[in-house]
Image (cartoon, rainbow, N blue to C red; front, side, top):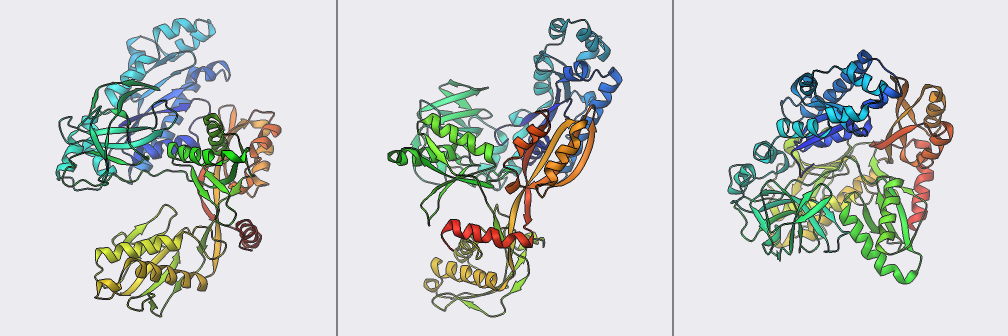
Length: 583
């Protein structure tokens, strides 16, 4: 989404808007990427469900309304733009990718056709004639050209959403103008590791021109690299080119250890340059496996390949269990991890994996305030703070730091804090959040409020280690006073089934500590939506298949973190401590 300015949201005409549709739209709106809609698989409505023309059109109206509900809900968080889709505006296309035909309302009018004519093509078995009369590429291409913005049009309003520098600075103006003759600025969005030419950094060229041999840096680092190869992406293909200008998606080789989210500049950095906003992901790793090579001598190669796959997919996290020495790989779910293991084996190492382990987080159930001063190790600095469950919404002006785990550091102290001291205090906050007191799981969904500070006037007495240690120990003292508990990851699950399997599917979800949130009739099928703990989901696929004779279609995605029921907390803590060697 960071690399593009427009997106085609594809919705199955039978299944309708599903959990993944919501995720796609949310991601697009957050990155200021304008959506248009393609309603696919209309052939199923005609051939399988045998709907009339009026029934099909009612189905279209419902899908469009659902998509617009999500667009408006996510868009109002950012601005008041109207990005809703409508057949009248030619921002909605309908068709069948399988049979290679599609249309917009405008094209149907130009062809002097009605939807009843589409049904007749199927009844008469003349689908090839339909694909010639309404070829799928025309409406899709027309929507892209006419409805989605060009880089020149999009970058002025996208810049403030994805970049937090001063908009009137030379760097800010370069990003907004999308000028090939301006300073070089690239946002890296993807790393390709399976390439005979080495690691390819893929990114959006927001400003300037990139050439083979250009000197570039990963901003703000000073190390310069020379571009060895520049490629233009055309679908899944890469075409080698001598140079590319602003507005394109480029591939670059020659950079050492690039990461998705890096900001690339040229040798001369424009004034006012700051890195792009960190790329955030709707989903997050919630399942871990321990991996080892089948042949122990291949351990160094395995470690190298783990580094490669985690670079290619930032939703994978590789770590080492310090107590056991196990190599751990964390991902969004079991399927995600299985795909990663397959990639490692394709790179050349056969691996063995443990049973999946669910990741938990620790959090306070109660508010705790430290009324006494907590001193730094040298006794020259002191802090008073409080901790709170994240049910309290922080006042934005007080927020010093927020992390991806839902933790926030707020400063309510009247003391004027030098920038160097602030950075050290924030580092101490991150340090404390790495491991909780119950079983060394990360801390999540927690607010830390700095109530007061005493900082030494002598800069040598308020060094980084002193302030970091002070903050960490103060937070841990509050944790030891608070009633701590665990958070567990929760999946949302959406299942589409024939109506006769409703009882089996709802029973499968409920028996796993799940909750049914909605049951909706979708033409001749039923859609069941609910939530269930990730820890209860590992054999869900097999259960759905066996209980529905393979007729269930389902999606799961990470939804939120939820407090573990009290009766389950103790056994989970015991299991984690034993696994970590802490028992």
